[in-house]
Image (cartoon, rainbow, N blue to C red; front, side, top):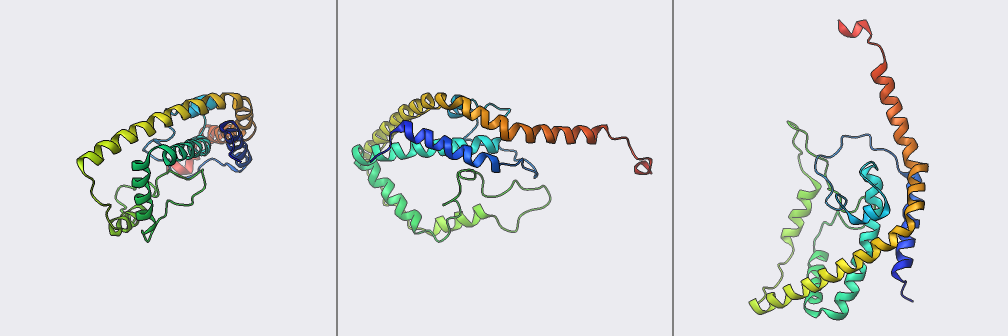
Amino acid sequence: MERSLETQVSQAVDAWLRWLPRWEPATHRGRVAPCRRCLGSPVLSAAGLGSDVPHGVQHGLSTRIKTIVDRAVAEYTSRNLPMLQAELDQQAARNRARSYRPAEGLAPEYEGLPLDPDPVPGAPFLFTIEGLANEAEQEAPSLPPLSEEAKAALRQEVGLADEYANLIGREVCGLLLQHRLRIQAGVAEYVEPQIEALLADLTKSLDAPLDPRDLI
């Protein structure tokens, strides 16, 4: 039996809350580029996760909610948009033919993030995961060309899929409002104490007197 959208959103929040106690602040250098999935996301606004919440916490929830929207759009496409579905099937077959697919099968907390860390000036990588993935993609067979009429029809179906995605997205955001209190309670219990501890350690470091030997 197909789960309702309300049930899917509730279960996604449940899963995120079960993961939240395992979250820890990142100790490595932060990324320069903002996350396109989370920056300005209406999903995060509906959930009450503002810019003061660490990105890792935001990303774990936004990715789970995006999966719900993507699944609904996929079902709509398979039922109503045959040209777009055929194009997606061909693309999926092409992807399966790639010998290296590092971005597949990741946990929601890592899905959609860059595969490699930001480069350090003066220390180039010998190779990157993204570069290896791009090489594998280039080796995969190309998709068959489309006529101008087919391209026009495909663009129309893509537009319909986008409209449906926006519709589902608005509905999901409305459903997330019902979970705001327990989302914020989870952040208060598991995230805020860790942030406060980091700030306290930083304050101690800044207030520590200089050792005269450090000046020699």
